[in-house]
Amino acid sequence: VHSHQRHLEALIEIGEREKMERMFLHLFLDGRDTPPDSAEQFARQLEARIKGRPAVRVATLSGRYYAMDRDRRWERTEKAYLALTEGVGMQASSVLEAIQKSYQDEVTDEFVLPTVIQEHFPEAAARDGDAIIFFNFRADRARQLTRAFTEEGFKEFPRKRRLALASFVTMTEYDQSLDLPVAFPPRELTNILGEVVSRCGVRQLRIAETEKYAHVTYFFNGGQEKKFPLEDRILVPSAKEVATYDLKPEMKAPEITQRLVEALRERRYGLVILNYANADMVGHTGNFDATVRACEVVDHCIGEVVRVTSEQSGRAIITGDHGNAEQMIDYETGNIHTAHTSNPVPLILVDEDFRSSRLRSGTAIDVAPTILSLFGIAQPAEMTGRSLILE
Image 1 (cartoon, rainbow, N blue to C red):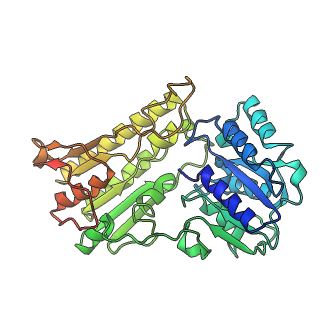
Image 2 (cartoon, one colour):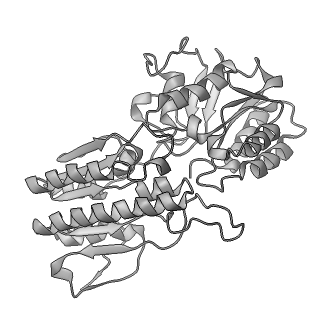
Image 3 (cartoon, one colour):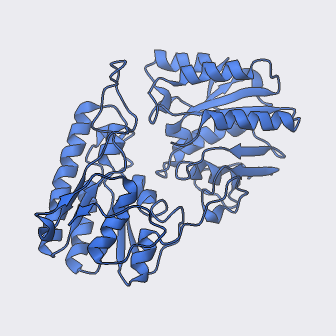
């Protein structure tokens, strides 16, 4: 979801081809979009691949909870940054020792504290003149740490100074405002849903809490931060008083619903893109009871949104882009399951005009054409899906 081991292997090969004298690897452990205790397996594979390659060493490791926060919980980002730049953090003699010690303490991959491999410090600390390649290909969870390394006037936590790096290269474009070299620049997508309805004079609203705000804005706009004309946005800050969302499974769904209901009653918007984060974010914790509660909250909130939408003679489409909460147990191991699934997701159309209609099966590429068909807007050639409504 965020990076791939093969990309790391390719980067190591490039470094060797360029005769780099030292390559220090700073590993961010997943355990959320992968099984929660899979880091040991990946670490063994990596150690086997770098064995006999003296220039390549693992310098630090950190759970994504710290290194890849996207919720502006800068105290987490700071812990990862200090490990990478000053060697401050937990200490271990090897990657496997650090991972196994965490497992003994019942800390799974996602939450492994930033840990320094002692023998490689202070040499492995990021310093002036170094070149850093951040090879996460998904932007949202790479931005905060990137800002800490590269932003001139960075003020989110105390930083001794901005390192005078030779370069800081990102795998993809994390944010246009960062002005950094990008290995694989974004393709410009044209005639996507937000653009098409905007051009047709439809005012639209994007609304979510912090954890999923990028999904209804940056990602939904084809990897662009920029708003389309007639596009408004509402960001509801995610709860910061809890460490993980199983402790607050309702998250900010009630507040989002209240804000949206107010907007719907103003009758200003022809299209609303709404994301409830609960089923995904709480599902990622592996806590079954909390995930059930999260789904109950979302069920109630969707019911309220649909009720008000119907009162305004509007239409509602309810769907998802992946599964998660429907599978909380790993069927092969019997352990908790925290990752996304590839199970089919529902698409529900609530509209009195189509009560007797049927929907065909389809994929994510069919959602935008379905919405355009409800507006009576012609589908552009760039959209290769088709409406799911069987007339």
